Each structure stands twice: as C-alpha cells, then as structure tokens.
Length: 372
Image (cartoon, rainbow, N blue to C red; front, side):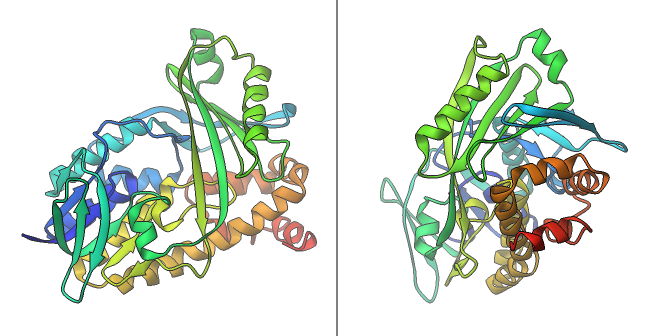
C-alpha cells in the first residue's frame, strides 16, 4: 500500500499535520516510537495562538490552570507582579494530557497511528518516499512529514542546520495545598544569571513545573541555576514527580525545510521562538500547514508559508534575545511599564505577533540603541 502522507513523530507538530492531512481526505499514517499518553519535558504554557488552534480541533483542551498574573524577578530579587485585564494570558497543560487529546482527535479525523514504531531511515526517489522501521518493515508514501524532533531521522535527512542551541532543565514537583493556593492563576519568570537565561514556575493543579533554560555548553551552570532557583522558592522539600532535561534548537535562517518529498515541521525544522523558546504554537502552525500542503501535493506551499509567517517572527525573536542577553534589566524594567506589559499581554493572547512587538514605541528604540 502507498500512503498519501506519512508522518514521523506524534507530538503536537506531527499530530496537527496528520489531522490536517486526514481531514483533507489524504490517506495518512503516523509513526510514533512511544505510546500515548507519554510524558514530554515542556513548560506546557499555551499562548492564545496555540489555544485557538487546539480549541478548533480538540473535543476539549485539557487545561490544568489559566493564568492572569505574572511575577517577574531578576535573580530572585526586584520582584513585582502584573495582573492581566480582559481574560487569561495562558492556559497551562501537561504534555501527556495535551498530546493524547491530539492523538484522539487525529484518530477521529481518519488517520492511522502506529505506536511503539521506531523509524530508522528515510529514502526517496521520483515516485515515492520509503521509511524503514527498526524491524526492517517499510512504509511507502507520496509525501513524508518529519516531526520527530531536532535530533530525529527526518531532520537529518532534510539537512536542517541550527544556529542556536539551549539546554532546558525541569522538575515537576508535587504541590501542597499551600502551593496550590499561592500559585493558582500565576506564573513566575526569573531573568537568570547567565546571558539569555531565565527560569519559570508554571502551576498545573497538583503539580508545579519549575525549570530553567540556558545556552548549551554550560551544563554545570544550568544545574546550579535550577538548584538555587528551587531553593530560593522554598520548594526543596517537595516530592519530585519528574526530573528531566531537553535541548531546543533554532534553525539557521537559510536552513532547508524540505528535501524532495520530505518536509519537516516543529522542532524537527528548528521552528520555535528564539527568545522565549516557545515551541508549541510553532509546532501546531507548521504542522497544520505541512499536513495541508502534503494532502494537496504542493510541498513548496509549506515552505512559502513558513517563510512568510514564521521566519519574520523568529528573526525578531533573535533580536530581542540579543537585547535580553545584553541588558536583562532593561527587559525587566520594560515589563513594569504600560507599553511593555501591554505588548506582553497581547503576545500571550496571540493578538500581537513577535514581529509586531518590536514595532511598539519604546521597544523599537531600545532595540536600536543596543544595536540588535
């Protein structure tokens, strides 16, 4: 059997791609090495862009909390809290819940999902692409969408290159009743000790996700930041439910997203916001576009859409990261101003793209002043 579309990986990008392709009538198969529901290291904060996409496809978004307040600190000091008006900023999800909801929606859309299925190689010719599995079985498809992460087979096959790599470390802590009361509806963002680093506390009902992220190559410093961060928060005696880490990789601006019949989406394409390292909205958007393009037999349309909509956002994210790395206190101070906080609110709600944030008066001047 020759499938119309084969998707490698069943995270948000892969399942969004499969959902779009199957909904368009394409015979679609998804190949996933794990079994849903499965844990994935992730902050799990859905901005408005992600939430709207999820709400339009899922029976229900499995939110654990909605956020309308943000506490900002700089190395645990200079704390202030801002509260949003006119609705929540973020919806907090656990990735096992969220991905499983997409899995069920994708099955309902008509796609076939094979789990515990390890992809070893991808090859292609003028007629089709062939995926070889660990047991040597082959899957043949007219188009392949790679969504198996930045270190996956599909990313290597396409030849994706990266110019930014960061290490994120995270602990999931069992929340006490006092924790749940203290953190409900509020997240914390801490600007860290190393250029470009930051930490976070995200509440998810009976758990707190506490994490930090820093440029790759500083493993000891990243571990120390997380340890000190948890200690400052007074959470060292909480039960650790999970302790994990992950690498995030942003693509070079000239990196390919396609090789013949194979395209890559989400992390496999290095598609995420460089400053915040937010990736779920990029995964859902790029996955949906990839699935629609593959179903229509026009893979070049996917490349054009990413170039038109995601590339400008990533470019601005790089500039804002450069400002943040040089002058974190400038960003901290900006969040205390009406202009900075309003831009942050609108970005979280999906009302303002990152490419538009930099055009806000004051933000544009600061970026220009710092030569970013």
